[in-house]
Image 1 (cartoon, each protein chain N blue to C red):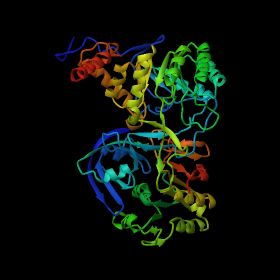
Image 2: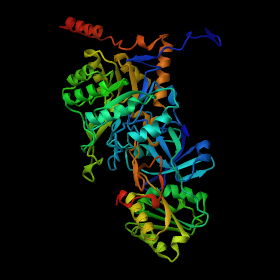
Image 3: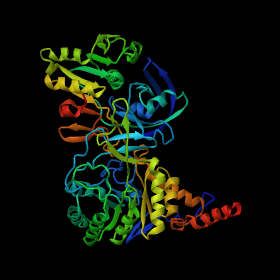
Image 4: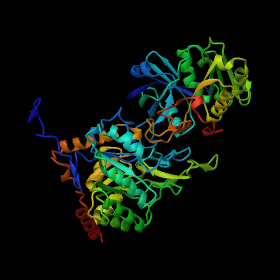
Length: 257
Length: 329
């Protein structure tokens, strides 16, 4: 566990809605696993006060890349940060995606939820990367993607890029295949209504997988109990017992839809 | 004594503080509910360095807590309505106390209950626990909507609970009061007369935030307890008013994030101080505060924190200001 002051290397807009922030941190770059997260203290001020959790998007040697969307006070402030400015970063925190040896991996992401999936795809082989976005402004540019991989499928709610509709539609097509239960394993991250549908489909077709829950977090270390997920074992702090949960452990009704 | 040619105080400053019959090695502790009740902070803090470890509030039976969302950030603070999620007293005694016994710090167990009888049931169990130094009565959690745990608003209710608990335990008894009682000073006085050894001031203050796009409250409980730097001036004012009126040790808390914040409370008269929401932002907040206080004393060659506790120059300050006013007038 580290709490390290880092210097921003680059902070660039990669699409109208998405940004990538990069910084050098060899210790964490070496240690962090896909799905784990970091708690960012943006500045030494009481407003905003709490840290912001981000999962890692890519690791390039010593460099850590974070994908984010400017949606709230913290992320809007982040867009204004310049190279050379400092951030305090705590981590790695939480659980990680379990690598699969036998099953083919299907990744399902929504919006910035693509981040930990891209990192997972950097580390391990996968069959499909299904990514859904609100509209063309929110789409992760193909230049940011793993260009050589043929399994990338995009969907947008308005059909402006890729398929029209929710990304869970092509997911269901795959899960419906004969033998899907034994062939496939799902990793998913994104907005809760999407995760709700992913979990519902996985449970319906009896396909195993893991999802990353991005509940609003307080402390990031399991103390405040502000980010609990509803599991078969009751509420569990998603920062400590997650953010990666096995689909079979989650209670569907606990997810927003 | 000289170390590497530099003059040093012959000893590091004495930070110890006595409440009731208990001597705490330093005045730094953590606010209930902000530091877990087992190993949550072990990667960051050596608990043995703390004056005391205060647990998240325990109830007799396990509580599942409130639905999500339970927290929301607000300017310089946050609202929470966790709903006292915990695994109950039995689990605490069986699983948490043995773990916490590893550390050479005083263990203070925060408890909440539906009324005097349930408080007594818990106190009788805790009284037998050797490791438990003190019991903090949480009479002020603002986030409970059911009848399971009440928010002791009435002076008579507070009096009954404190008196009966006092009669049934020799442990250090601390009472945490809500800043929202309209007759706060009366309740504080009754609590003291009923035999509490100290007061914890303050608990969170009820607040609210609205999502203007969904047109819904931002936490499931509708309202929640406001904590963080936003409430620090209010907390300090309560410590000041209580210390001015009553002869009772106070544990000051509410938005303390740094040693400077902590010194404000100690100078105003707090025996001990706790970091709360700050622990979420900076996991070493409590030990950072401890080191800061120590350095403040060292730099000023003050040998004991007792020299500063309650040293607020209030009468002098007021008369000086009045004097200025008189000259102008």
